[in-house]
Length: 144
Image (tube, rainbow, N blue to C red; front, side, top):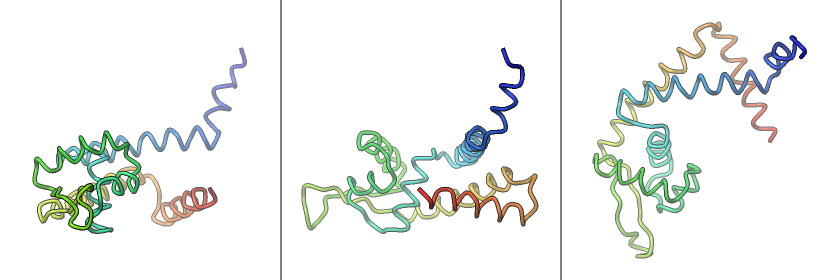
């Protein structure tokens, strides 16, 4: 077996991005857990804050959470009074999801925790390197 195979693997951008992505996910998930949130919860709260009340199916598509998983996430968020779920007055077949005042307050805290996690992630970088990394990653994703 080639002893350099693992070394070569570990220099591939795809391998490095995967490892960095796993680290980033773990750091953010740990911070959000301090507020009693999971990543999916955070995505739902962000989408509602940005887009306003959304139909449940539209929210599911927006945050790319499977509709079955969305039901569970919304049940959890609603039980904590972070969102409200009511019939859409324009279409009684749909549920309209709204961010509550408590949800908005928790989202503010979650954004702070997310910034802390990202600061932890990028701590080895200078501010200029962090800016460059963000720009390069955006460029990779925008090209797809």
